[in-house]
Length: 419
Image (cartoon, rainbow, N blue to C red):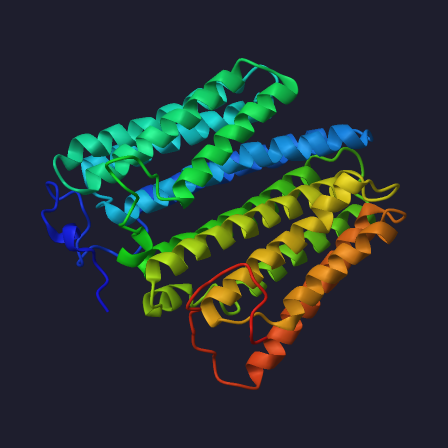
């Protein structure tokens, strides 16, 4: 099967584009960017935990909405950086300038994030807009007359529209700011999903996943590890910042958080996450399957972040009354992760195991009765559900050879034909 698009070989834009001989591994510069991503995600969790301090239910749900709005540009900035280094040589000046610009913007965004809805919105939005537009301008200049330039023109046009809502929203407050930023998010993600269509230029026809599936698969694997690492960092920092004598309850909560992170890691890499690159490479339509796999990671990372926030709540309030928004993090975080993981399994193996759906159902069903139990009990229940899924995964794998990927012909968020 032909993997490269015809125009891709028509010149290399001064050596900026990757060749078949380019390294398939992430560079130290990309790993440096990932470290700053950990910082930004950690600030996001800290922001969400501050919003969880109220017993006012409406205030807490608004805090969840705010956290999701701030999470989206962070994950999208990481995603666009990964796609950039997939297409362009990471050792070339233009690529490195773009990555470093994004890294500095991520640092500023992380610093401004806790007050993004309370006076620092302009700093957050301006850093994001400057980074996303600046890197495109750098690449457009370096590409010259290469056909790939049209793709970034379309990208820039749609992002410029979203940038208007990011910047106007930064000058507002409350629900108005959240609404304007929500519109910006919809424009960005929606236009990307449609291929940034423009009259006369059409839609995107060059998908990065079709060019380097193993490289992008590895980057998304690293993103999962970034999120899990942030979970450990956040919970550990919360535990260490406690004043006075450390209690057995706090130590037990720390142990549950650690085991939960380990179980999330185990479930992801066994086995769909491990063979993602092979599945995309073998797919009839690598670009479509890879794009779908990227979307599943967005859902899984959101679930991991929710889990991290939930365990932060457990660390600070292990006993006492629970609230719906708290359970949305403690139980909903793992459920969201399992939903994304089920979709990834659908893409890689053209099926979904029963235990994914059972785990999600148990977590959701446990919510109402656990409103009358302490947060620590909810965290234990979530860990037990994840342990059960991981245990069944391991037992089934022990009785048969390692399963080879069988990519779905048409990946979709639908119940599979074969379970």
